[in-house]
Amino acid sequence: MSHSKHTKPTNGIFDPIDLRGIRVRNRVWLPPMCMYAVEAQDGKPTPFHFQHYVSRALGGFGMVITESTAVSAEGRISPNDCGLWNDDQVQAWKWIVDGIKRAGAVAAVQLNHAGRKASSGDYRIGFEGQTVPSEQGGWQPVGPSDIAFDGMVSPHALTTEEIHGIIADFAAAARRALDAGFQAIEIHAAHGYLLSQFLDPLVNTRTDEYGGSLERRMKLTLDVVDAVRGTIPSDMPLIVRISATDWAEHSWDLEQSVELARALRDHGVDLVDVSTGGIMPGVSIPVEPNYQVPFAETIRREARIPVSAVGLITKPKQAQKIIASGKADVVEIGRAALREPYWPLKAAHKLGLSRDEIPYPAAYTRGAYR
Image (tube, rainbow, N blue to C red; front, side, top):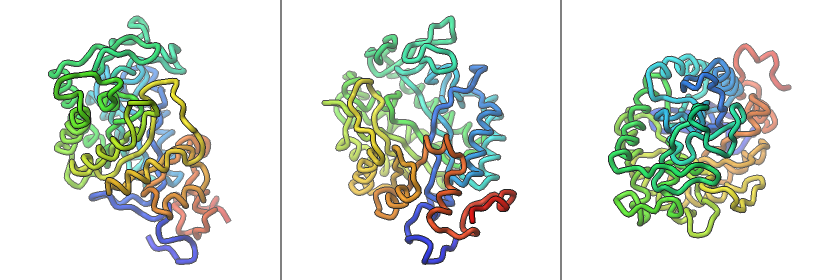
């Protein structure tokens, strides 16, 4: 991709980025956002998911990361989540993945286990902020310890054998992601879900090899990374999403995140997707544009690993500045992309790219900005 010098700085959101064997056409990515739209509660994505993801790929996003996709039925956040724990789900994903790729984007999947936040309600079935009763399709959640998330039932504290089973579930889901055609994998270790729960000392009170010191609390995340990295091809990018801080005293923080990011780099992770929060409700979070960018910048600098930045990034010049100033390698546009599926096309025009530099789908060029 060539760009004339007068249109934009050398490091811009529309420069490609290489991760292992994949070239992503630009640095504006769609982050995983839960849709809770699997009405049949069988983990299989639907025509809605095709419409949702492929429209953003047509809209110019470089990488489309699908929503939290459970590695087991018990790992779903809600009964209406997508999954990759059986082969029927692989078939349901294939046409979506193919549509994303045909539109020029890289198709990535976020693999997750919700831990103690599993079996929770959503806008579709109710019980928001509560555990869904078994007669409504709910189940017993699990966690590092038997400490409940606010308003939900106490989780079953996992045995070591059960932990090893979950690691195997991540590897099996990664194999299915390959079968579905995904080109990159993101492991969800953020937002208070299972891996994040093991990282945070307020939630993980274990005294075995998976709890206590920082090294032991990181062990599950690194074991999952090793299992997935060992399953996927050597040229396939692996991303891990982390919460850089849980915004609470004596909990997970930026200093520990830097240590984790260094370890992730050494275990074959290619990019850290930096978010924050989610381990507990009621904490004070200073939400404003760019509020999470300094965390990404610090991890990038201190751990020497590529990072993506998220959090109320809504304007083209705002996104461009984050990349051009070296604070992050990628920006993820979430809520703004729900409002405008074609955000990147408009952003490229506003930033002064010429018509042939903007990733218009061929069928849409008659509607190009002038």
